Amino acid sequence: MTSGSRIAIFGATSDIAAAYARRSAEGKARLALFARDAAALDALKADLVVRGAAEVQTFAADFTDFSALPGLARTALTALGGLDVALVAYGSLPDQKTLNTDPAALRAALDLNFTSPAMLANLLAEGLEPARAGAIAVITSVAGDRGRQSNYGYGAAKGGLQTFLDGLRHRLAPAGVHVLDIRPGFVATKMTAHLPQGGPLWAMPDKVATDIAGALRKRSAVLYTPWFWWGIMTIIRAVPRAVFHRTKL
Ligand SMILES: NC(=O)c1ccc[n+]([C@@H]2O[C@H](COP(=O)([O-])OP(=O)(O)OC[C@H]3O[C@@H](n4cnc5c(N)ncnc54)[C@H](OP(=O)(O)O)[C@@H]3O)[C@@H](O)[C@H]2O)c1
Image (cartoon, rainbow, N blue to C red; front, side, top):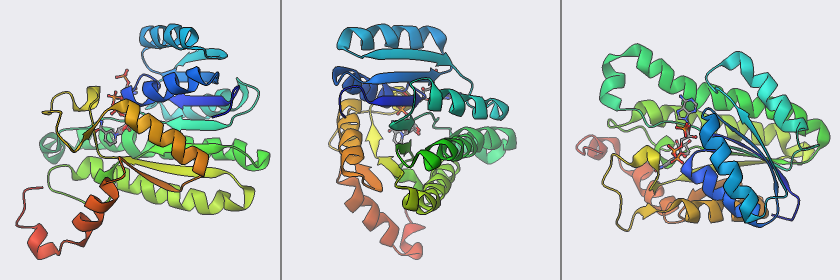
C-alpha cells in the first residue's frame, strides 16, 4: 500500500479489519472507518493516528439498515476525495442449531452475511466503475466452499457472496476495478472467542491482514488465508457425498 492510499473499511472494529487498518496506518494511509460501535471506532482512530495514519475519519453505521447503505457507499467514495481500496469485513458466526429452528435468526444471519455486503459491494462498484480504478475486497470464508451440517446458514451466505463477487469481478474487469474475495480459515478473533482457539490450523488477525495487503498488491481474485486452506478446501470439496454424509463436519 503506497503512502496516502485512500482506504474505506466497513466493519472496521472487526479484529481482522483492525489489523489491516493498523498495517495501513503504518504505511501512512488515509482511512475512512465504518462500524456500529462509535466508542470502539474512536478508540481505533486514536491508535491509528499514533501509528502514522495520514488521516482517519469515522462513521457510525448500521449495516443491516439496508436503506442506509447507499449513503454509506457515497460517503466512502467521497470522504477521502476518491477511493483506492474498500474492505468489507463485517459478519457474524451464528449458531446453526438456532438457525435450524428459528427462521428469523436465519434471516438475520443471511441479511448480515450476504444481503448487506452484496448490496454494499454493488453500490461501491457504481462509483469505482466510472472512475476505472480501485479495489473492492470482501471477507467471505472457507465455510462458503461447501455446505456442512454444522454451519450451512453461515456457509450459504458466504458461498453466495463468493458467487456474487465472481460476477462482480467479471462485470468490472473491463473497467480495471479489482475485486478480491478473501477466504480465511480459523482466525483467533472476537467471532471465534467461544471456540478452543490455537493449534496449527489457527491464524492470528495480523497474518490475515498481511495476506490481504499482499493479495491487493498482486491483484489476486481469491485469497485463501493462510495459504494451506486452499489445499484443505480442495480436498473437502472433492470428498464424495456418500463419504461426506458419514462425517460430523
Ligand atoms: N474469525 C474467523 O475465524 C473467520 C473465518 C472466516 C471468515 N471470517 C470473516 O471475517 C470477517 C471479520 O470477522 P472477525 O473474525 O474479525 O470477527 P469480529 O472481530 O467479531 O468482527 C466482526 C465485525 O462485524 C461486526 N458486526 C457483527 N454483527 C454485526 C451487526 N449485527 N451489525 C453490524 N456489525 C456487526 C462487528 O461489530 P462489533 O465490533 O461492534 O461487534 C465487527 O466489526 C467476518 O466477515 C467473518 O465472517 C472470520
